[in-house]
Length: 248
Image (tube, rainbow, N blue to C red):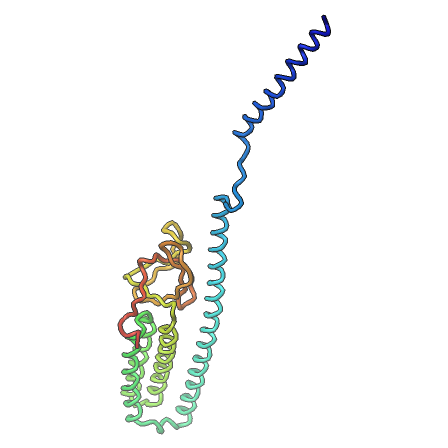
């Protein structure tokens, strides 16, 4: 009798155990994470990879901009040193009475030539309005010295104008042949620290400001300015059309 009960109990256990294991396995399938296919990248990891790649590109562009900015400043230092040397020569000439070596004809001729070159440069580089205005003020100062008979002083200020004009013209010549050159196509355009309107505005650019294209992200472009600033601008705000006069 007891033996029969044991056999019956064993049979019941042998039937229930597989059923129980099967039920646990089925239930477990609903909670265990599914492993992605070999060629499938998990969404979070894909986004992180894209963001990291964009960050690396921006970092490289910033380093490139810094390098070019340093080179630009070094060229500016050379120019300013030349102006300083010219100023010292003028002062020596004035103090030693050598100013009489300059004539009104020399000053008037140089003044006319400087005015012509400055007018040409104004059309070539409209984004340098501040420098152009400073040069115009220097020419007015030069004219006042010439009118007062101080021809050496007048020629010195004319020399400074010519130096600034040459610097701007060299810049125009360098950028207009760049294959990555863009220009701001609207009156005003925001440069941001990321490719969306939710990102912070780095600065606001005016129309015809030249930019160098570095990368794209959907409807946004990563650009670098002549001053070395790096940021994102909406593609609809830039153009490859060269402003009138810049093309040479």
